[in-house]
Image 1: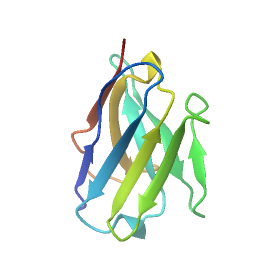
Image 2: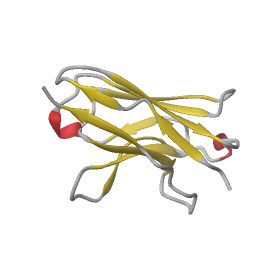
Image 3: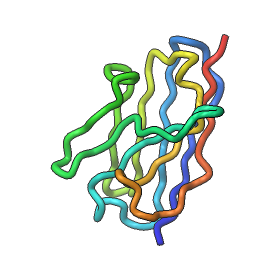
Length: 115
């Protein structure tokens, strides 16, 4: 069972940037379709960025042009660069497969965008 540990969240002002990391205990790249999800208070979990089966990237319309997903195969780490952050980006961010394949969810990392 792969364990996922997210980090890099924090409090940032609108317009600011954060870089999230997701470290995996095992090789995550045997599954190509990893992604970043988020869950805002009172809302369901949504996919915001991910890799497709052919290695291209995809983004939710709400983050397109502001967020960038990347990965480091050697480090078994997934990243999410978030720029031009907005208050509506406030949520707990998680990584997992896309679609979820039964891997346990990590604790997530809180991102709060507020002035």
